[in-house]
Image (cartoon, rainbow, N blue to C red; front, side, top):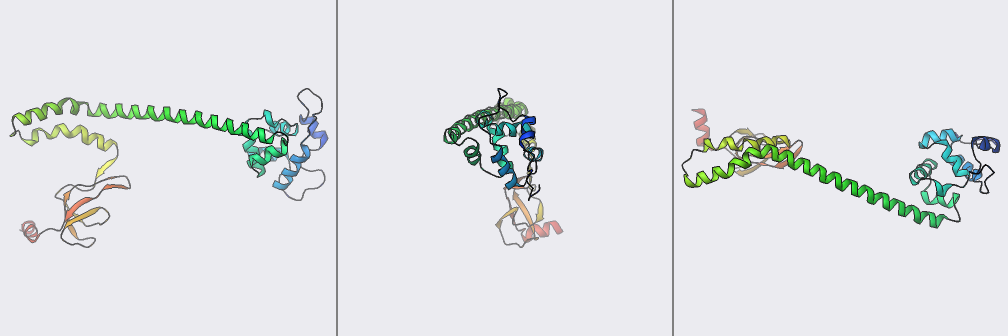
Amino acid sequence: MEAGLGPRILGLQDEECQQQGCLAMNGSPSSSDYTPQLQKLMRRAGFSSIRELSRYSGVEERQFFRLCQGLVMQTRVDVLMKIAEGLGISLMELLSIFAPEESSFAYSGFNSAFRQEYERLQAEMEQLRESVGREFEQASLDILESWLLNWPKVTEKVEENPQIPAKNILPLVKPVERLVQQWGVEIIAPIASEVPYNPHLHQLVQGTAQPGDRVTVTSAGYRKGDRLLWRAQVKVPTDDNLRIQGG
């Protein structure tokens, strides 16, 4: 963008303006010519031509010529917002310049349009949220199907016969483990494993330890990616444990 432009400024001279369509919609010159106002705003923002401003703001050139004609009230809100942003002014200021007699009414009208658009987007987001939620629930149910069907039978059998070996029950928990894995939830360390003590990942429930000391996991913790869900509970190995491991 260029500053300090000469008298033939900003590509908006009367001859070019007419050639490019700065005429009223009925073909006669518009009773409202806002070319000087647009020239001033463009000069202040440092634009040398309509084309340059069009490229910068992402608005078609014809929209600026409509602005010259006083057709701000017939221009879409999103287009006016881009024009205002490109010129470095607020939407209210743009309206007060190009529709001075109707700016208050126009602004309230645009507020209404914004509110309607906001409500429409809210409704779409709610529908999307419900759709994603239903898909998530169905995917989870598909994974848990075998567990849901068999777990009530297992609990009934265990109540009838408490001596049923636990190893016969463990395979039925696999669907739950698979679902948790699909969610990206990882176990920090298996129970009974020995790991270097990390205060961020571990909750010391017995003994004292410094970071890096060997500790034994007593309750598994979980994390999801970089986010810690629950710290693993750990304790300092006793002398008896150390002797058993050494012997």
